[in-house]
Length: 409
Image 1 (cartoon, rainbow, N blue to C red):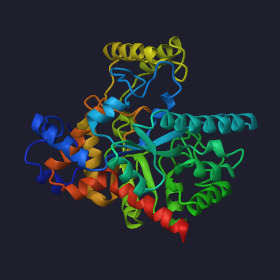
Image 2: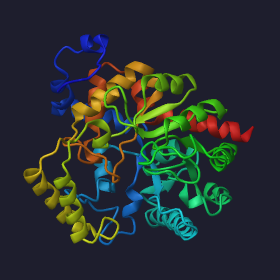
Image 3: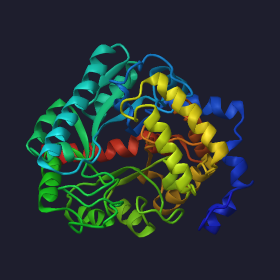
């Protein structure tokens, strides 16, 4: 594996090549890593799993291995020693008509209901968390932690005052935008470029209202200009719930080193993600893209597919790999990003947000059952238990506590 812009100091610290260190873990190493996670509070800041809660055939209590639609369920959370995290209310960006804004409003509320319903139906295994103390108590009680986040604030365009209702219903993290610009902010990946040069006036008002309520602001997916405005205007730290390093892969969704240092100086945290296209250039041909679109269409489209069709989708994607090869990101690639970010800002400003069930996952990190591999890598590099506890949730909860303390004041 080639590590672009890897520092001489980090390279010197490795006693064997990173590729061997990154993925060749012994059984003893993985057992030690899992045991450590079981002691610590192990949280992921971006779980898109709520998209599956209403999906035909999905059951959070059953394993759904080798399925292109599912990477998170209770049995695999136990296997990977994942205590929970932030479960996302995701809304795709519509056409921004008045009718679309109403559909987004209703879709957001429906997803919120689905999260709350899943928790209520599995009260012996899951519990809603509103504060960092809740998360620690839920862990101690042997349950899984459900914080609620919102990815893309489009459900709030029609009525921004709904933010207060969402907060009362459990929302504790908010991002303004997704793949395309909306009424609140510019996206890092909008094809036509910026519309607001950062946040719109409505976006600034929404962000400040969220801060007043103690909701953590999430900068992932927003443009660099939004980042710069958040640094300037927020009285509390913010996070990037699932992003990576621009120095390792120059993608607009990733953060450059200068801004990483600004984030750390402000007390913020970047949660490193495992979405392959943000880690490496997959080199996807037009033919491959067309074949993927045809496969999805034949199965009824991503949102309408059943879990059974997700298994068929997985088989179809595997077949496409043979016909139209692409570069799939690996743990080596993930560790290149994570290692660089750790070097730039230190372990007190880094976390984990792997984008499970939203496109995340690697060839050798297929689902949440593989999470001890990350902990094993951190242990190999000499990070101690306190530092690993911070990376696996403590740093994120610190920002959350600061946001809530500020709101109380």
